[in-house]
Length: 354
Image 1 (spheres, rainbow, N blue to C red):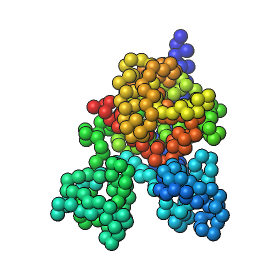
Image 2: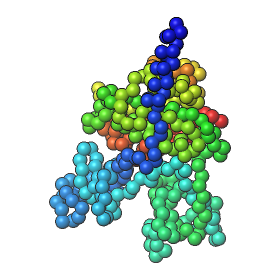
Image 3: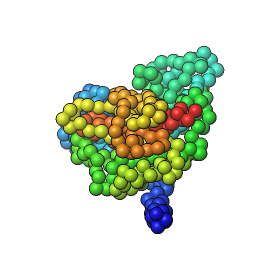
Image 4: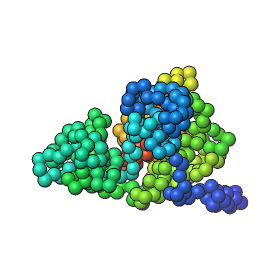
């Protein structure tokens, strides 16, 4: 028995020294495509960035696209497995949600100020706004802020007429994450590809990006993130669970993406728990991720998954979308979605630890 205990101790030491991996530097990043919306009908799509190139297709108004590349005032976009170049004048770029979502707080000398179509005092006025109202900042140019209204419209206001400040969008300003050990588990890896998306990509690659993005944000907030893997490597399920126990994790989050090839229109986010004691964490994260992403609610459910079933620490498994759905696959493969999803997880954690 004594020899077995010594052997077990050696195995644990080797495991801790070789398997546990630090959070990668914030300089290491995966750049996703940006999101955009076509703002005019019958927009010509060309083979190159300019009017001299052939028209190879058209896009209708309000079409959601991925912006793959920029050349001057032209954007290379992709939608429905079709790619080409369009004039950037007719593409509205989606604002990225950073860790601290900026909100514009209006402070006006007079009773109201003008909102312009462009960052210029000579551009047309689209409406006027009153003192005391707040709007999210979506862009900034020298002495101007671009703001967005609840209906999605945008306009420009002069900086000298307003005050801006940062609002983390949390009622409780106390940093409840400081010092918390959060194990972030990127589902699958290595030979275990996970599900294969509608376009042929592997789930394991998307989970890696999400996990690294989340860990980086947690670190900046004073938490102690631990990644079960940082690269495309295979990790047995029992090793993933061992991370939570070895580090006495305050929370364990296993990140996955779903698939339903037989029902390609299925979409949305679902969060799973096994033990009843895990349900509060699952509910808190789920609610906040739905708010930040606007995804379809597939609810908080019981799930018989080993990484949460055998886990003695607070643990959840979250499926952030269906890669078998072409539209949802395109959405999750954007920097905007990754920002929103990880912001939601962080909000959920902060509320859970209150």
